[in-house]
Amino acid sequence: MADLIRVLFHPMEKEAMVPGKATVLEAIRLAGIPIESICGGKGECNKCKVILVSGDCDAGSPESLKGLTSEEISRNYCRACQTHVHGDCEFIIPVESRIDSPKILLAYTGDACDLAPSVTKHLLLTTTAGHQSGQRSL
Image (cartoon, rainbow, N blue to C red; front, side):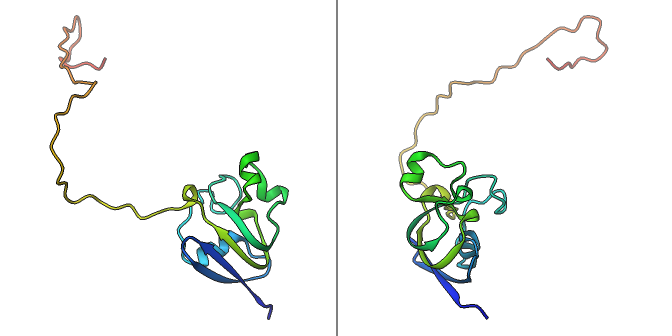
């Protein structure tokens, strides 16, 4: 049985133990961290961006950098679904890649304000010439 590789994720301070050549996305899922991955890890959406802090992986390969800006590349970004780990690694999961649990506002204690929407609803009455029904879509 192959040795497991330790992958640590900041700022959650969670880790996963994965086999060699596993993707960072697989490690993130194993650690139980919710992350954007609309395409399901196929490398098509560029939502699962992570930042390499340290470690042995193939971040920097053409597949892991496809679709990233030069600024993101200079800041050690890579795509989690296309980056494979070869040894212990540390990554930061940036805010734009995280799926945080939304909080529902149950009560508001602030002052009420008057609403003045820029769009209003107006009833339009039309006459129908030669039309059987009294209602017509405009």
